[in-house]
Amino acid sequence: MTDAPAFTLRNLIKTFDPYILALLGMVVLASIFPVRGDSAVLAGWVKDAAIVLLFFLHGAKLSREAIFAGLMAWKVHLVVFLTTFAVFPLLGLGIQTALKPVMDPMILSGVLFLCLLPSTVQSSIAFTAIAGGNVAAAVCSASLSNILGIVITPILVAVLMKTTGGGVSFDSIIEIALQLLLPFVVGHLMRPWLKGYLDRHKTLVGRVDRGSILLVVYTAFSASVVEGLWSKVGLSDLGLIFVIGAGLLALVMGGTWWISGRLGLSHEDRVVVLFCGSKKSLASGVPMAGTLFPAAVLGPVLLPVMLFHQLQLIVCAFLAPRLKIKNA
Image (cartoon, rainbow, N blue to C red; front, side, top):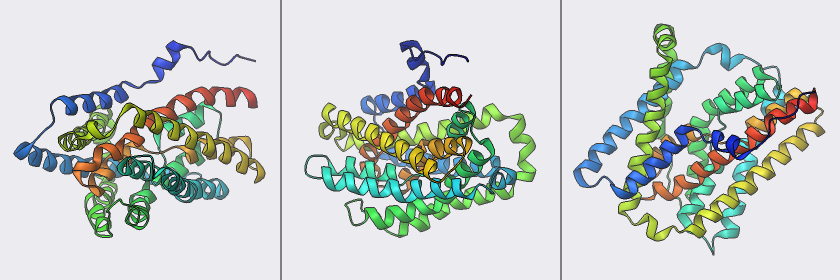
């Protein structure tokens, strides 16, 4: 039996994707050189165009085979769906209620928004494969979560955050349909003509994907810095966000592993539920937040999403190889 790779400081540092460092760099850049006035208006237009392009490419990249692969594992998909869009939101509401007297309302809105997001796609599938799980089911669960999340997340935001200080109305659903869902559908319909180009230019597409999110983060934090973000958010707030994220992740991962065992799922399917059900998508969350929230509050809303994203990568990188060895 092969030993699990040691979780050393070097391995921990390697877990930090350079892209995460780039995201943090955008926060620093926006804090020092925030965009203002007419430049901010222009940056907002560019940001909106980038979001449309981002979801157009997501639609064009997703094959129909990936959507339908693994559909027979209905128990897996049901547990992942309920965890993502029911259990997480309930936990978010509980956290918001409990911490309302001691924490900034906008940061709490960010925690709740985090809980309303769909699952990740690439990392969920990658960690499932490393752990020896059912990759076909993971592809299906993660892809369906992202597709449904384009519609379900804005509805949940409108219903839950309108009454809890988020200030989001049902008009946002129309806006997100035009800015996110429509480009996604158009991109998918154009896939037969774009597939060859996208396959030949995978690196270029990836750069556009990540570059769009970096632009949204920069414009979001610029507006928040202009409104005095760092005078309102201190180190104690960041520490509390980290503790909340760690608690959420531990609770959901433990719960999904336990319930999947009670349902009699195989080890391979339990791995899918664990990794797909506990993850939240930064790639979907950043552009959605840019569409759903006013620019001035985007910074504190996105902080919990960014910290949780890195935390889930570290924990899953630690667990995945050990789960495979345990089942060997």
